[in-house]
Length: 366
Ligand SMILES: [Zn+2]
Image 1 (cartoon, rainbow, N blue to C red):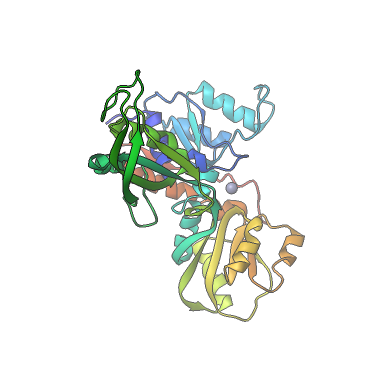
Image 2: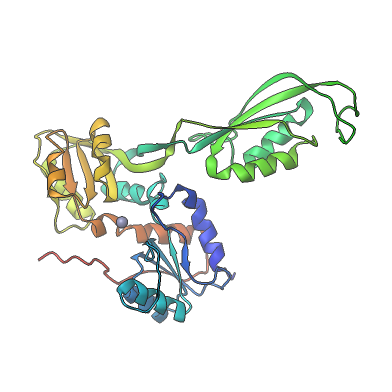
């Protein structure tokens, strides 16, 4: 089986839809021809020049990276810094670079789930679920078409709530209409007032699917004009958002927890606030810079918050209510490359998949 770069990136976009990335982000195909055939995939945290060299050596023409090497606008490409040198080399050598960044942070099976799994957390959930990610569709269909219309909506991705699929609600009622002289009605005739037994079908779905769902609805619906309305919901989407929280299988004393954290995440250095003399059970995590989640971590009752890029004064904000631990940005996210390789290997057989051996961490602890 030969796959195109688009086959790989389309699959990755089912895991972490680009619509879930933060507004400042640039998660997408950054270089390369999406129609090119994939010769191999190299998974990495950072797509640096050394990683592009490694891809060339391994005969991989696709690099899947967590951090987008192009993050701000480029006004020239002359090789004056590491970003431009990386891009120029990738383009010259026909290497595609795909970035899967905050969209992979914001899904419940992404960066933070990987950290939870490594630490051994159970009952994991999103720490700060996002609001206004969901929409509701109400559509009116003849009773006899209810099943067909509902199924089409489900197939297009509507009606998924947590562990339940095909979720909908319907009410039976009477629809009225009068077709004009230009109409071609499925039921009734021109100029004649009609009353039809109809179903009012309601479903919810992620906002980014609305185009696909409306198309499916119109295709499955028997009427020339479909009566429907769309609403944006204030509800949080429990599956989408920042950070995660989970529980250790049993209470641990603080010293043992940090010893285990260092071992499991392969850490040389942890910067943390004072121990509180309490057992550790609930742990919040956020790969990368997660200090913005400190209030949510405290509110959730976590004993420890594991993140990175914490500044001096921000450590004070833990204020004895939680142990705030900075494990390093690279260290917190480095296993994202393993997650990407695992996911790709589950879906694509007969494709050469590699983990980078380049240590892209720009920081050395001495
Ligand atoms: Zn990061």
